[in-house]
Image 1 (spheres, rainbow, N blue to C red):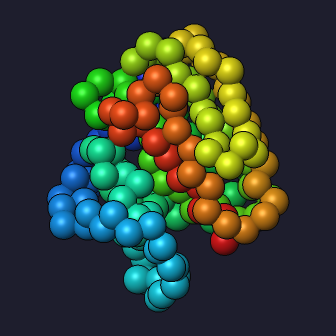
Image 2: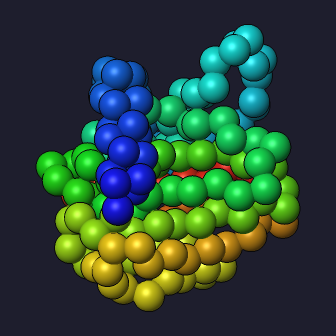
Length: 162
Ligand SMILES: [Cu+2]
């Protein structure tokens, strides 16, 4: 319990320190965002991408967290953000092919789920702290997903596989 709590506050802190300002002025409603993953800005582990406005309501989106090279990456479901426990934390992660993403429910913000818009993965709808749902990403690409009850609040996420 306390371990979970401290991890949660760590996430909140890191999200709070960056965040928000990055989104100002990138309201391109145009769908076709072409990616070039330009240069790694040495040492930076977060990369700003627009995703065609997908995150325009997501207050805790602070860029793509580079977590490549890990076997497993955890994303909190019900992280603090968007006016309560209505966020995925981090909202966007970059992983390597073969990595398993584990979504872990914090117990905050009520009932959540994880639904990939393309139909490749879908969790149950639950509020229970400690629930986990996982998906292993074998193919490179950009995977956008939402929490259906809170999508309009900005509870959406992206997994970039490169
Ligand atoms: Cu939700």
